[in-house]
Length: 319
Image 1: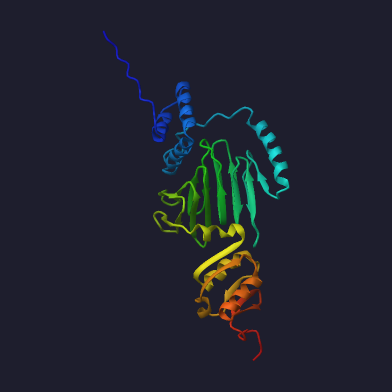
Image 2: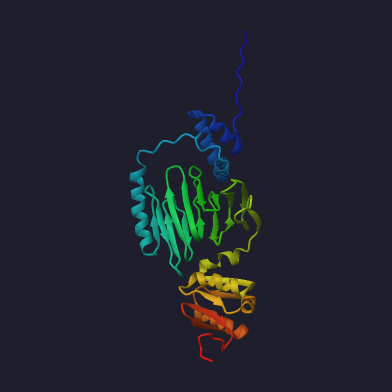
């Protein structure tokens, strides 16, 4: 009697490896998988993207076994934390390390802050922004509650990096991207790499390549992806606000995010004026000079706010 032994073909793609490892693991398969990861630096990103897509689909929540904790991870982490803290103190940066409970960070009007995370990633918070950070041995999660943040994500195929918001989530691996959440609007802009943006209500996802932006509002089945103006989107990192033929009312609303005093237009006609300029965020004097030079308008204080008006229209003045 002749016996046959059918050898299973070794996986060669990220999708094949993901399927094979979900079916169970063994030392030989693990060695082959590690060799595949080491063969090409992009393999880890591709594999992590498969994990992210599977997670977003909602099918893997209770099927992936909990990985074992490394016995000396805590001691190694404390040594790394001490060294990094000494190096970053002089730079005035905030450092956060896992494992710990969820940490919350926020910025005041006009404030910007950079956080250095344990994994080598960094997060820069724009004005009026609040986030919650939670890292575990299995995932890296940040909840953007309001505002805007720029993420420079370190590669770690074993721990996906996810930014969650009330409208949707952004899943990234070794990439740089910007997330804006305000006025029931979500915008995710990818500067480098790829980001998977999923609708929180429908779990429908779209892949956002470098140089593109995904926009999402309530009621939309999935995000809309379009080319991004990276310069205009990321100018806030250098404390600049660049506007190109935009209504003055929208410009003032955006500029007010960086000030403690709200600024508005006096009339609908003034709010409708089209503006093209590069403004210094929070610099009210420079804003007034720009408006005076372009339109002959002035800034007037009326109670607890500043109003852009034509000269001599201060409603608080006596007739």
